[in-house]
Length: 165
Image (cartoon, rainbow, N blue to C red):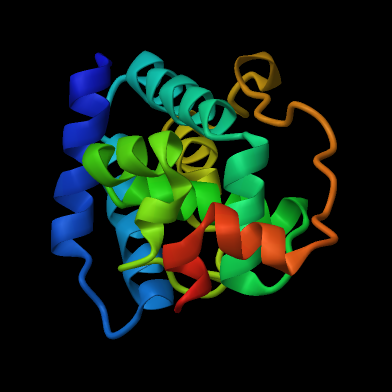
């Protein structure tokens, strides 16, 4: 699966998944993606998961962590991973803008999207399609521990749009 197809599949599912709130939309989107991927060749499903994992790792920065902390009032690995998977689900433009400038999420970011459905799309699709587990070796997003911020004024200066929400 080429990167362009990865994003087309994500964005198509996003358009079809519109729900009452971010949680419902994210859950619907994940279900649509799993349904689509289970019809693909197992290597395509693994490619989807490789791309997804790469984009998770690419966004795994201190600046993004601080922005997610500001959006939620706290941040741990679970909250951060859910947020990044939700961000990928927003599509390539919003993802790229947020990675480049996390403050750009201010108009649309919501407090903790308390679902990890997007995180496991590739795993679920691969398991359903093949009956086997996707190889753990293709995945690994965590870089290392990112410190919690101590100074909310610093965060407000770094991300003025998010702080104003």
